[in-house]
Amino acid sequence: MPPLDIPRLAVGDRLQHELLVREREDKTTKGGDPYVILKLGNASGVLSVNVWKEHVPAVAGLRPGQVVQVIGEMDSYKGAPQLKLTAPPRTVAASAGDLDQFLPRISVSTDELWARVDGWRAEMKGALRKAVDLFFADDVFRERFARAPGAPRGHHAQIGGLLLHSCEVANIARTSVQTMRGDVSLVTAGALLHDIGKVEAYAVKLSGFENTQAGFLMGHIVLGSLMLEERFRTLPEGALSESQRLERHHFIQSHHGILEYGAAVRPMTLEAEILHYADQTSAKGNDFNEAVVD
Image (cartoon, rainbow, N blue to C red; front, side, top):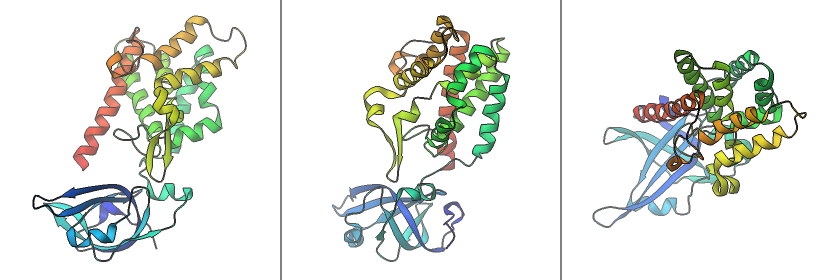
């Protein structure tokens, strides 16, 4: 059976497919009756299901991260599409291999994004290229980077979201820095390096995108600087000056702009300031687009 294309479903369509339980919310009506709101989805999108009082026992024990076989019909509730179950959902076995089938992923080709990244790398020279290639010439890192989300929830919370977000940030920053007569290659390097810590901060599981223990305890900014410093140590002595090393760290440490938002320091260079606003534009723009689509 072909995968279910959720965005193409219309009222009256019948379905019998396996979907991932993304969210479960147990609630009570004004009259005191229990009901459950389920969010079921696959890589193409999410369906909402209201399970009313008489059918609540049929979903007892269902929790996020489980894959269920769903039989139902598309309906409409308060003007929004909604799935109406016609049979109790049945839990089915799932494995890590099902991640690509059930979790949301970016619609842009990762090959296209990597071609863009590699084109930017080719423009860089000397110490700047050395710093970027510590990560982006490493096939193992590239594979992890291309699967990581941009966040556990919110902006770019998709497989491939980190790669897409980083390319968006680079595109925005490159255009802005040209307008302000700054260093295009330098801000591009900052855009590629600024979120490398998210590879260690977030985990991709059937239950969704989660913070790792390191992500909870240190956050992606600290992790990014630690990763950068560790790889700097693999370079020959004198490959980068102290100033160049600090400048690369500064992009990571300052890209959230202010301390209240998690930055270790405020941006202190033109390129770091532009990187901060490019990061914000990509994140907030993505949130807006998703809200409009929903």
